[in-house]
Image (cartoon, rainbow, N blue to C red; front, side, top):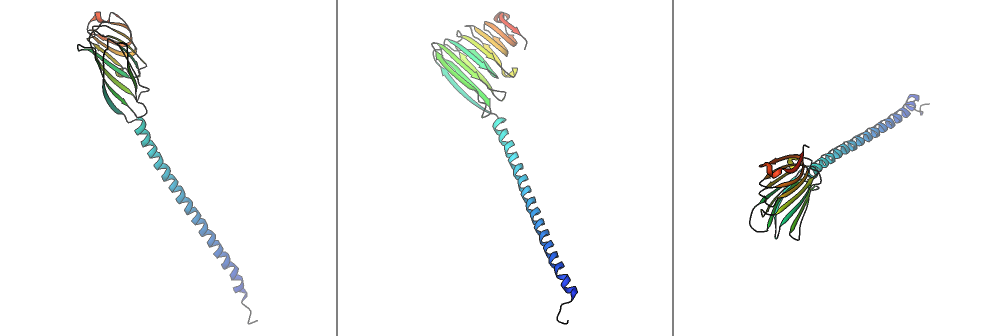
Length: 215
């Protein structure tokens, strides 16, 4: 009997092994949850950074506007036909003694909303067209022509009245205006046509043949 281990000692060995196994499982579980927590934290931070970058990129591409300016001249112009679509303003001034037309343009837009402009001379007529695709785009056109040049303007689809201003000054050759909507200012120019919006003339005789309606 002296060579045998005590019964109490034999009974304690399984309990010790079971305790070690339990501690090992507990450590593994804690390590797993710790790793999961780190992964979730990294995921949340990554999503937050991507969200900020996406917002900044969207603002830069779709909200931040830039303005570009240009000047062009066209020779041999005896009449002008202008078509405007969107928030585009136009000033036409009769000045000079030759048949050279000078166009100064200032376009304001985002990188994806640049206005589209075309200008061609067919015969002795300058055909000028400008389109702004949406509310992020606007344009201001200033055209200087010989006073006896006849001017025809068709304008529509403006989203903001203050960005659709048509001004004629000193066009002795007369002008035809069809605009809806627009703000029209006429000085020393006989006009015909129709305006949906507002019309202001320095002399009533200049606008007696143009119909108006409030927008």
